[in-house]
Amino acid sequence: MASISAKPQLFKTLGSNPSRSAGARRPASIRCSTSQPPRPRRYRITLLPGDGIGPEVVSVAKDVLSIAGALEGIEFSYSELLMGGAAIDTVGVPLPEETLAKAKESDAVLLGAIGGYKWDGNAKPLKPETGLLQLRAGLGVFANLRPASVLPQLVDSSTLKKEVAEGVDLMVIRELTGGIYFGEPRGFGTNNKGEDIGFNTEIYSAFEIDRISRVAFEVARKRRCKLCSVDKANVLEASMLWRKRVNEISSEFPDVQLSHMYVDNAAMQLIRDPRQFDTIVTNNIFGDILSDEASMLTGSIGMLPSASVSGSGPGLFEPIHGSAPDIAGQDKANPLATVLSAAMLLRYGLGEENAARRIEDAVIETLNKGFRTGDIHSSGMVLVGCKRMGEEVLKSVDSQKPVSALG
Ligand code: IPM
Ligand code: MN
Image 1: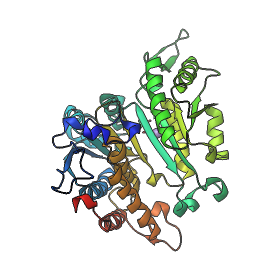
Image 2: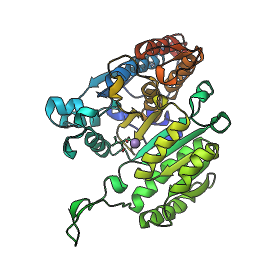
Image 3: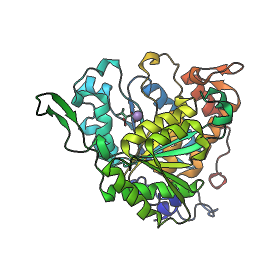
Image 4: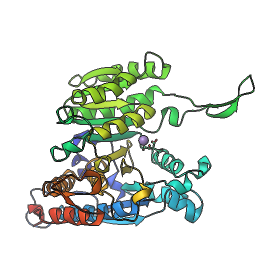
């Protein structure tokens, strides 16, 4: 189908299935047709604003997505649904059935943030985080892409010395629907001394390792062709299988240079010499930890987007920061991580590379003009709130030319 071949090669098997979206087919002749304007591509987007600063940042990202899309002849329809603490308060569960059903029917899901002090003491089934894990499992989004780049404009925000942080550009690919997060058996019990115990299971099948490895090799191939697989194969059986399968899959990607690193060493190397990394692939729990560490290299967690994708069906796109309840509703949040997540939605979810670039270019231009929210502010820069930052990005997108084919 034309719309699939229009996707970047990397995700030819990933992202949403445009055939399910009426009007989403991109005519093969879009670039050369001069006689009649192409039909707009249409996508259905599920918005899950969630809690805390979530609604503020999603509202900005939605506007940016709409305008960048319009300039590329894309139309979006949006459904906003309940998720996280907001859903617990309204319907009593963190992921209502309706939310998952609608998300599955759509072409991509954009999530703000979930959680807050109010629900911290809730039992596990009633925690906002449980809803997020159910959403990931329900959508089957097994590959989580978390880029961390130190932008030259923000290099001074890093807690590392400038000479260490400068030029860092890496991508953590985290397995997202397996491992200890979901492994059985799990639970609480008592040991033979009668003491309380809590236990979980780190478990991976060859199939799960193979599919995340292939995504990682393909991503690495589009970057600097270097993949580092992180495990704990000196101790854990699940990691021993992980390493064996990653080695096996590497024969399909002879152009990608593969290395292996134990997770403790990787944690150290990330702050010692982060530029040695290009693409990192790792399991669910190590990826959770290392991606937080990697994000801090950039000094600005408020800037970092993420994409979670499956082999088919809609992807889930969200900033990696949390709901920041301390600044919620005060117009202080940095919306750029969510705006950049909308760019990832376009690139990895819909195969709309041009619209993705428009958003990324607009963010860079806005930073170049000196606009900064509190989290990335430094002297001499213009301190702005969430809304104003959004308006400035919109202005930058708006000043870009529409594609010539659409006049
Ligand atoms: C993340 C978060 C989640 C995780 C929590 C909120 C369940 O820390 O997305 O990294 O542990 O995966
Ligand atoms: Mn985390």
